[in-house]
Amino acid sequence: MGSRSSSEITSKPIGIFDSGVGGLTVVRAVMRELPNESIVYFGDTARVPYGNKSTATIRRFAAEIVELLIEEGVKLIVIACNTVASNAREYLMDNYSVKFVDVIAPTVEAAIRVTKGKIGVIGTKATIGSGCYMRLIKKLAPNVEVIQKPTPLLVPFIEERHYNHTLDTLLEDYLRELRDAKIDTLLLGCTHYPLIKERIERIIGDEVVVIDSSHYTAKKVKAILQQHSMVNETAKPSHKFYFSDIPVDLPKLAHDFLGIEIEPYLKVLG
Ligand code: DGL
Image 1: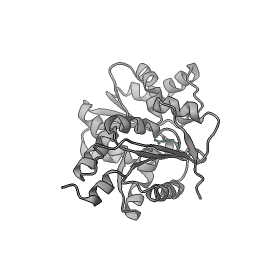
Image 2: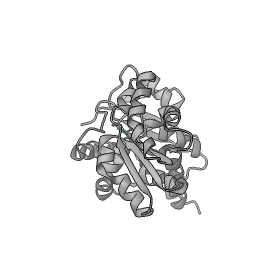
Image 3: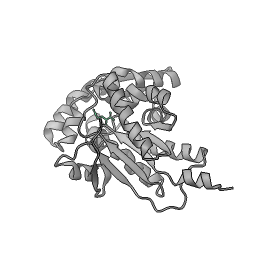
Image 4: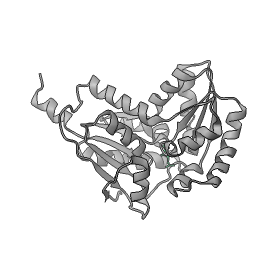
């Protein structure tokens, strides 16, 4: 029976956050998978990138964002940033009672389903340095070989919308080692990378399956909401997009990531 309190919970928004605009790839997938859900997004554009920061700083920034989303009354929080998920997930779960979903486990599970035995992982320095992907893949599939490669310059290129031959040269450099090692699956361990997925696929070659986190994370969000009877079946959704800075390129970038126009609101943290 739908009690008043359960309908109060189902109508609450989902919180989704990232260090910047990358998490909008996850927002896009969640909107597709759960069209009745309202979303409150937070992108920490004033402090991006997180990928070259220390774990202590990443945790502090992430905690501030989680507190803001909790104040917004969200029913679940999606950590749509691999850098935060790999450096701060346990910390956040230990300190806040809200439900969390992050981009790592659903993507690893998807990669393990398709691999023939050799997975490559690319991500920011902080993500790869955390060893989080390596540990989880080895735990779930001990016989799978994992080859990791930090690719720290990709986020700045994407944020600059610098999609040209210089980016291809950089990708050639970054991916050579993984191609030479004959990986069969490449896991995109950063929510910015779906924007250049086609270039990555072209350079890594047809034989390699390239997996990004957005679709699998959205499926996981749906499964968790269903499991807790928290899916919003009826309402007309309304979304809010908060950013800690609104740089000039933000509307264009947000459109690249989300495919629709948004109205960005400034929310200064700290
Ligand atoms: N989008 C973030 C991630 O998934 C990376 C961007 C950053 O370095 O802040 O890791």
